[in-house]
Length: 514
Ligand SMILES: NC(=O)C1=CN([C@@H]2O[C@H](COP(=O)(O)OP(=O)(O)OC[C@H]3O[C@@H](n4cnc5c(N)ncnc54)[C@H](O)[C@@H]3O)[C@@H](O)[C@H]2O)[C@@H](O)CC1
Ligand SMILES: [K+]
Picture 1: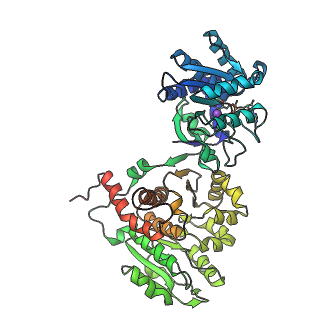
Picture 2: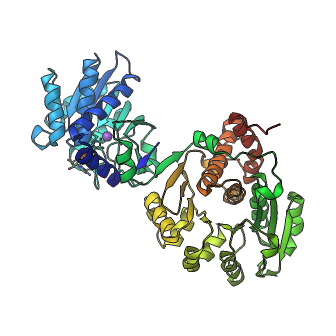
Picture 3: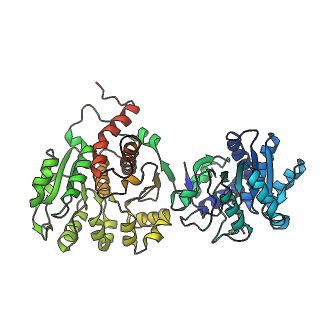
């Protein structure tokens, strides 16, 4: 599923009209036809359907839907929100065609009570009030209509966007609570931001025939990353491979107060395919880690205030990637280590306290020639950008892209619908996971999984998106089988890596070559 911003969508529509020659009326007809087909497959002949259309082009789509479904023999009442004169040109034309077919409609502004009676009698409502043109707080009759529609508690199918929502942002004033939203050509960004995502219900894309060349030239790549993408990109292990083939990684994590962060991130890394793992920790917690992960090697640091202190020469380890951050703590010494790590000519994964330390050194990040991956949660992202969490969350796509492009990094902005952004600005939205992951340690596990994953793939984005997907899918499976959203521990996620990978590889019909 493609995802668009409002401006991208308007540019795509504009170019389709100007360069391709499909006019707005044609696109509206295609949109209405396509959504009507989807609705038809979900309704019964005895349903009483109300289509409520606004005065913009979204309303025009609604008028086409009403006509098509009427012609197919369904019981349809079309309501326009406003009187004729103020309705957009193409929507007026759609209304003229509707009338030419012998159909009539009613106007909300002239008959509010009758609308409420009709609403009560209806079984299905089609919401074509407002689309991507919505700006600011919902005004005029729309506010009442939206509230009345929500109160009546019927099945609502929304066209393009649940009316009232902003296409690009997560914040909500008043909006339709849809059962399903039929998104035109692709979802709009707000479908993956909160709280607006809660209003969409199911999402189904309808194709209105916009040429793919126009889409490519007028939008960034923004897509959902789902199981199909994971299956088609899982790496193959060649029969002639050996442990060196799968990378030498160093995970620098933990401190006296947080030894668990080192256990979780290192264990997750080795379960995710690392060939040879070295753990960078302070000497006094080695015995704790060792009892959990006998397979690992160690790079022991001096301790200062219970945290890592010495800057090491890593050249003898012949590393391919370094992960740093979970539980390392924050003081001058740990900052120096992060600074030193930035000079290493290997792939880097920075998380947690390393994200705190990297902020004054972002210029050095920009100068790096090897992939740098930052994995902030919204709070860490907000402090990297000097913004509030709310400002980040409401605009996750734009904020991540700007940051990733400015510093030439891969960014994994965590949260529901984690977004992976590449240095060139392509974005991939994860489709797995649930609130069971909102727990201490689950980020440390993801960091380890990412470190393990980047060594298995030639393409960094695929490695990141797949690690994020698998992390979420494990939580989904646990909640669907033996756990609840309350009791999933970070260690359960690690234990779930093997069963899930096993299942995915079986599904991919993975063959070892034997
Ligand atoms: N070529 C195109 O642009 C196409 C557009 N299509 C449909 O058209 C929609 C976009 O159409 P429009 O740009 O006309 O926008 P909308 O249909 O979303 O509505 C804009 C109308 O709402 C009013 N409005 C905006 N914000 C408001 C607020 N806060 N409170 C009250 N009224 C408000 C505006 O004054 C304008 O009259 C899409 O979502 C899609 O459904 C499709 O028909 C396909 C082609
Ligand atoms: K709508």
